[in-house]
Length: 479
Image (tube, rainbow, N blue to C red):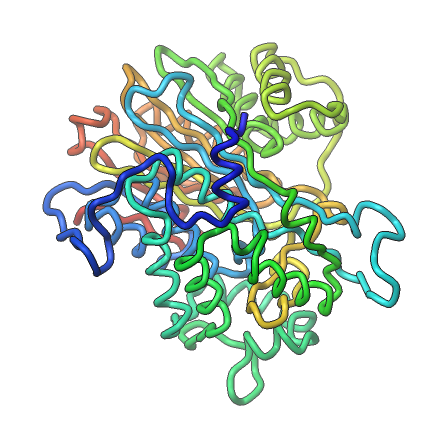
């Protein structure tokens, strides 16, 4: 359950953590951290520039939560098709000694009131593409508050530099741009952001400068995350959303807060495997599928069936801990009844980070649609995510395995309907001794995985990361 201190910090716009004392910085100023030698950890992600930003944080002495926060905020710059500042998602975090497999942080996309209640939009306001509340910054802040080692503002430096100075359009972003070129270029704000001087859409190798987004990141670094939800940035975002047909109001931003809960867990031969819980119900699907595989079942579409059954039963209004308890009971029962098939689901992206001490973070992020609404929130430069009220929810899934109170493996996944089954199958293979990413585990699922067969801390020589060879991602360690 979310503590009142966290809510106060997030809503008041605190830029510093009320529970950490920080005596050094990662990126200049103060007592800047020198680069470490030897094993620093592993990073895997769908977008290479964000992966390298996270690796740099580890190399400067940051921990997994520091690197994951930097990764998530950098993805908002380098992969706005799937993880802009308007996005949402969920993360698992773990440190050696954690009970219950660590903690889950849930900041899935939230619909605004205008998308859920007819007639709530002010007279004359168009709400033709309802937007989701931007949950990314608030969710990463909460995760980092609990597990980070430096001030949250420090983790924004890589994203800020790429937004201000320009980043190279990678293959993943270029493919996403090409996939939705026509509708994206039909919007003036998106066209101004994603087109070249000759009017054509950006392609791989082009440079993308996001000056307005850099201003948002600088404001968050200076004033705090809360400014995007209850301050000057919030007012700018709301005005931009309403002008672009997103329909968000100030009350939507103030009331949407992330949750911290226990993860779902499955025991397998003395190893605890933690999974994201609902509302990130791709984690539930992965947990059910992994449980079935551990009992001798065959790979298939067990995860999709489990999620379809869960969504069909439409659990009543419960707090986050109640939903976790219901989902855990379903996992342990090993029985999936009804549910049918899932519709075609939205895109997502995922990543995982492990530090040299065995701390780990695994996250999945989404816009609820490629480029969300396809529109930009005015002067903020933020691409707005699509409201979950109008589209089916994606399968957000991630898993972290631990044994004897030490880290063993992390697996995250994307790939629309195959994501949850892919995470379950990959975790099964990794724990059985296969290298991460050794081969595709489903037709469309894309995994990012890290394995330390000898455990962390102490077994760093065995650690290896892998990303799906069919994607455009990067796995990087100390080499």
